[in-house]
Amino acid sequence: MISRDVGLPVHEKQRLPWDGQCIANLTKGLYKALLTRKLFFLFAGMFLFTLLSTMVNAHGMSEAEKQSIIDGGNFRYMWLGATHMLSGYDHLAFVFGIIFFLTSFRDIAKYITAFTLGHSVTLIYATFNAIQLNYFLIDAVIALSVCYIAFANIDGFRKYLSINPPNMMWMIVGLGLIHGFGLSTRLQELPLSEDALLLNIVSFNVGVELGQISALSAMLLLIAAWRKSHFFQTFSVITSYGLIIIGSFLFLMQMHGYTHTSNPEEFAVAMQTPQFNSDNANTTDSTAMTVADPARWQDSISIIIPARGDKEYKLHISNGKQFEYEWNTEGEPLFFDFHGEPKGDKTGFFQSYKRSTDSAFTGSLTAPFEGTHGWYWKNNSLSPVNITLNIKGEYQLIDSKKESKEEKQPTKSATTTHKSIGSL
Image (cartoon, rainbow, N blue to C red; front, side):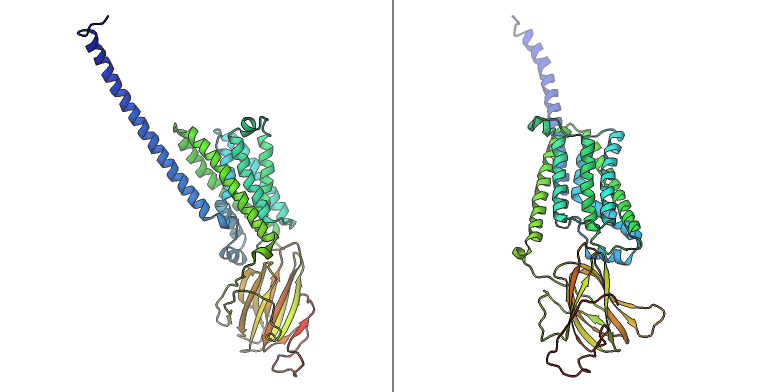
C-alpha cells in the first residue's frame, strides 16, 4: 500500500507533466487537422466553382474560337487544342482519376500513354473520315468513364460487386477511344481545310497533348502535396466519391441535352442571329428565322450543299445598289463567307463582309463596287444541307441573268422559286 506522504506526490509529479504534454500534442494535432480540412474544402470549393461555371460550355467552340480558326492556320488549331483540353473538365476528371493513386513515374507514364494513344487514334481517324456521332451521347459515355475510374479507385468491384475488376490498362485504352470521339465531334464543327485536313487534325491533337501535359503537371504537384498529409486517406475517399457524383451529374446533363436534340419540337426556342458591322454591310436585329413571307421577298432560292461539300451563290450588283437577304438551314450550322468580287478584276481580289459559322443569317448590303456579291458555304456534316435564301432589291441573278425588280416587267407574282443550283 502506497502512503499518501510518499506514493501520491511521486504519482502526481509523474502524471501531471505527462498529461500536459499529451494535451499539448493533441491540441496541436487537432489544429493541423482542422487547418488541413479547411484548406481541402477551400480548394475543393474553388475547383467545383470553376467546374460548374464552365459546365455548360464543355467542349463547345465559342464564336471567337471559330473565327480564329477561320482566320488562322495550324498554330491556331494547336492553340485551340490546348485550350480545349484545359477547359474539358470531363477529360481532366478522368485523367485525375487515373493518376490519383499512382506513385511511380513509370506507372503514370504507362497509363497516361495508353489514354493518349486511345483518344489520338479516334480523334485523327474519325475526323479524317468524317465519322460523326451525337456529341451529347459521346459526352454522356465520357461522364460514365469518370464514374468508372473513381469506382475502380475505391475497389468497388470487389467491395460492392464481389468480382475482380477488368484489366485497367485495356479499360483505359478503350475509354480513351471514346474520349477521342468526343474531341473529334467538336473539331468537325469547324471549317476544316480539305487540302490540309490531316495537318489540321494533327496540329489540334498536338495542342490537346500539350494541354494535357500542363494539366497533368499541376495535378501531380497537388496530389504530391496532399499525399504527405495524414488527411490524404480521407481526402482520397472524398475525392473518389466526389468524382462518381460529378460523373453521374454530367451523365444526366448530357442525356438531357440529347433529349433536346432528339425531340426538338418539345423544346422549341427562338433562334437568334448575330449582328455584324461593316462600312457597307449591315444586319437587322432578328430574333428568329421563320418561313419567308412570299409577299416580302423578290426571289426565294433553294440551295443544297452536299455532305462534306461546298457551294457558292452570287448576285450581280451595280455600285451603290442595295439588296436585303435572309438565309437559313433549319438548324444545321454551316461555315459561310459573305463577300464581293469587283467586275473585271484579274488579280483574284475579293472583299469579305462576314465570315462565321451559323445556321441562319439576315441583313442587307449596299454594294461598295460593281461586281458579284454573295455567299460561299461549307458543309462539314455527313448529310446534305438545304439552304433557303430569300432576297429582294436591285440585283441580277447570275444563274438566269434575271433582271432586278426595278428593271423587269411586272408579273403576276413578285416571288420566284429556283431549283437547286451548283457552284458558280
